[in-house]
Image (cartoon, rainbow, N blue to C red; front, side):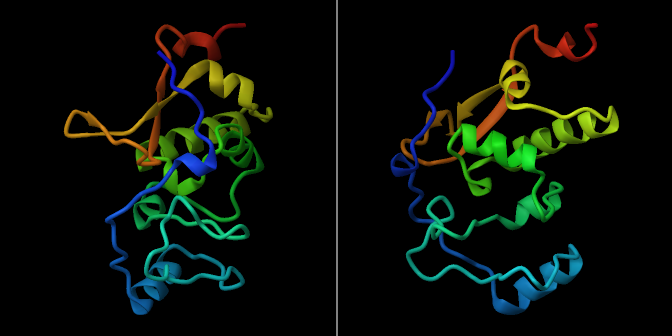
Length: 154
């Protein structure tokens, strides 16, 4: 069962406060070798990760631990754009799946494409305590049943 692709106006996360200080942010930037040419800031009160300013994007610190790097692969941006998602809306494990998909094709020296990603993976709304988080804005990908062998078929 597939879910409808969200529109950017449907997603909102409330009640989650930023716990990152400027010093912690600087330490993360150094630890993960994020280029100082990227403008970084801590969210203002009331800002949410799923609704960044038009020219910005937000990432959670867990993303850095799951392999998030800048710049983002163009193929990854195409996947996010297709599903109308920002990086902050994709759960960390699913972010790793997107990265693995790209790395797999880069090793094969072939370009990954969104249609194949859609055929292998399914978008799902995140759940918390066995309840769907209404309008949470968080999503995850999982493998479609019986589609895993698609990459090994000739």
